[in-house]
Length: 118
Image 1 (cartoon, rainbow, N blue to C red):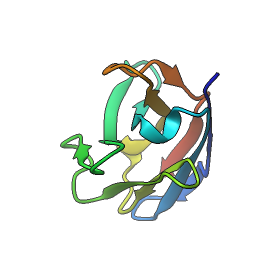
Image 2: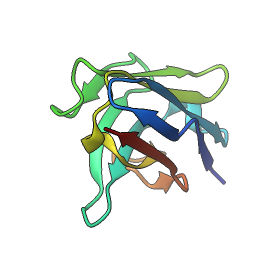
Image 3: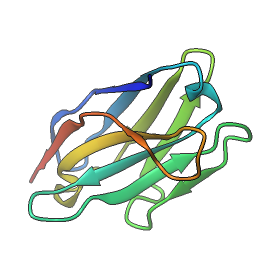
């Protein structure tokens, strides 16, 4: 069984920073691609960033490029999302996801709220 638990969300002023973490359990997580998604009120869930398990190749949504950075520690089974220069439009629930034994994200955390005030 794979479990993903996010932490690090909170309230921050525009221009500030937050670091989200995702603690993953399950023997296959360290060999799975990992990603972060977010869902704002009244909107569909959207992709934020991802990182492959082997080469650590990262991909970002255009809206966060240059501001967010995803990283992983396979030894500790953690994935982090460093978020800088936050904007009010970054306000959302952020979810950690894992693609275990598949190309699609099939395991999700419960999410952590990020609120950016003006």
